Image (cartoon, rainbow, N blue to C red; front, side, top):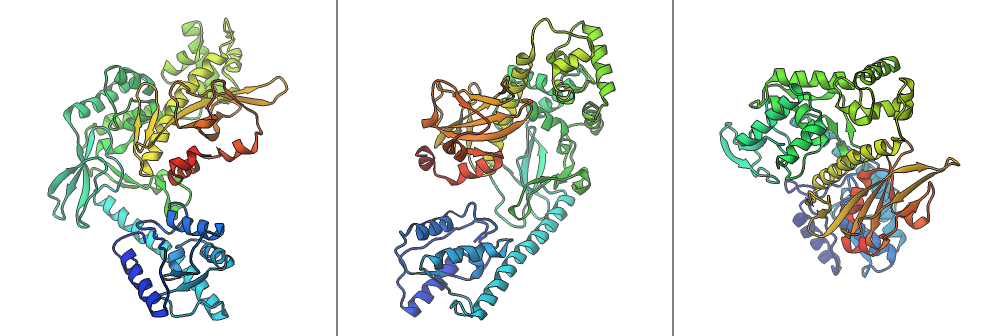
Length: 499
């Protein structure tokens, strides 16, 4: 069951199943219950997974499985999925009976038809409920109420009652307890508000980049609202989020019915302007957006080379750092992507470095990528309900006070024969329980895939990887980081260690 406010509470189901068992003379020997879990996907349903595992492994010490009704397998969008789990049980010789249905699950044509209809109805119920909930959330956004998520640096969440009177400030992780209460955003402590305004001033008046601002904040000993060091991404979030000018924006990303998370275009956003007290002047905010938009707009090849030529003439030399620090210039990564490499772009404007800077530039880009990757790991694990303690010096992550994890980035190298190779260098001095290894693509610009490596794989010498690797390593490889998080969340740490 997914909420407490429905007939499908675990207590009600348990009572109905117990009465059914007593009436038919069954002895209840084991209970599998997923309390407070969504039935849209198998992920997160530990009890159902355990049931299937016990049945398939032949360790189940029972003959009959009592289910409250057909929808309890799950409200899957594919009706065949719930049928599949029932089939697994019946194939293993376990009889399945439904306690609250008006038919006998005897394999007859009538039972088969009714179950098919009810499975489809269960999926449709979730779709209709999702539509209604989304409409309700949009209405609350338009009324100026906050819908989930942390307040962010410089802001705080405040609980208000149905009359709009302030009740209390919500600390991180706290939620409202009454259905009639609502949450709004208010300015946070004065020092945080002043820091937010300082960030805007450094960006607009001093022309500092997000990375430079982050470095200055860290030098001053100022931490983010998560108690972590600032990064380019965390500074950019402050510079681009409309909540700092009091706007309430919703539906930037969608994750409906537990399907793929997608980023929505601005035309799909739900916005309420002036919903909260602004801590940044709207005119300053819109100037920042104009600068970022101009910086990120797509230049033609000729425009990019013309700007690079003028930069070369002004300084007498070029480097990735010089490009990134210059105002109104595409990033060094943009030049490398457009022209194949920075050296290729240099040659087109007549600049020849005194030495081969390729590794210097790549290493600099990878350092920036590593910071963003660690930030994303922390954010995703926190979103999934985990607690993460990040060491500000070593970036070692302690997850839910159970195990440690380290994120390493592996540069892609091309051999003379055109093959690709990677070396994963383990943080042996930190001895993390799990290493999240990221293989970069051929251009070393974005992640190719991810490896989840337990401690026993750790070694003093780098782990060499080719384009195709052994079966054991393939078992640890993931194309997307999101799936890796789901595995890390669902699999007990003791089991991960024994892989």
